[in-house]
Length: 237
Image (cartoon, rainbow, N blue to C red; front, side, top):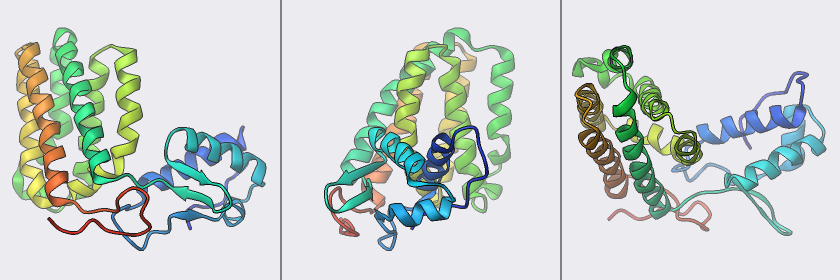
């Protein structure tokens, strides 16, 4: 069952239920075989303290976004993507964020550069990185969203943001591997250097490579259930 609490009186129960459930889904460790895939609609309604009508509205929205799926006569299930799907999403994300970095090079200001450096500053010392995996993961998200917004391209921002939610949990998982810290942080530094030079091509290349390295790392090191299997882990390669 999802780890959620009762909803206090909001303007829209369906909207609030959507936010609470999605946040819970993003925090789930989908590599953990003990994580329950099936959602008990009645039990979830009781947990949230709402009727099943607004809950179903929220669930339908999450189904459309690809986070949940409804199996006739079986129930509602959390969607677990295969390793290949996650890697593919990251590769598409690399292309989109690479373009965002190219566009950002046209608009970035000295103030933006200072802000990006401030975002990653807590991890300039490798001694502090290893003990702050969750914080590093959050900083990583902030950094990528900052560059994405610098592109000033609403269509690109929307496309990348939609994909981002689906790989949020795997970014957090990967950040937990200490051997990822130095590589990821160095990538951030290199991207900032390219943007500071206003070198659009270099910024794009470095951003793409930065995310492609993560895709390769996931492919080679992270294990999680294949799509369609129930709690079945991909065997080590």
